[in-house]
Amino acid sequence: MAKNQAKGKNQPTNQYNSISELDTKQKSDIAVWLYEIYREYYVQNHAIPTEPDQHDALIRKLIQKVKQAKIRIPDKQIQLYYNSKQSPLLKRLKKEFPDIANHE
Image 1 (cartoon, one colour):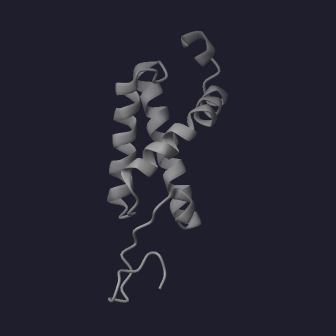
Image 2 (image 1 turned 45 degrees about the vertical axis):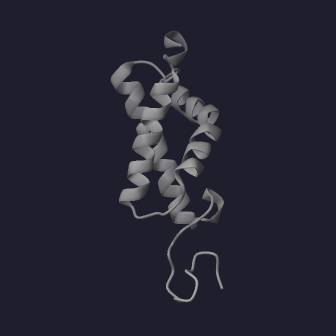
Image 3 (image 1 turned 90 degrees about the vertical axis):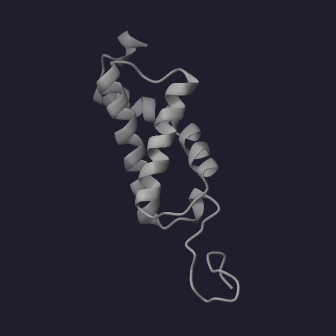
């Protein structure tokens, strides 16, 4: 029986244990949403998130988008994914907004 199927029902629950188990499209969607959320924060605040509560707010927004898309993955996995993408997000943001170095 596949990991994403409920016992004894033959109906998928669509529950995944990690980001790596998601379909390519789902992973891509999450990556796009994450950058959109991170970028939106920078545009609104003219600063990158540095405080834990700022990061938590962005993680909550990402979790909300994932749930709206009916992608069932533990919140902790989304938090781990967010944390692992901090450096690439900042690098991408600096390419789009070269003046970030002056705001850090």
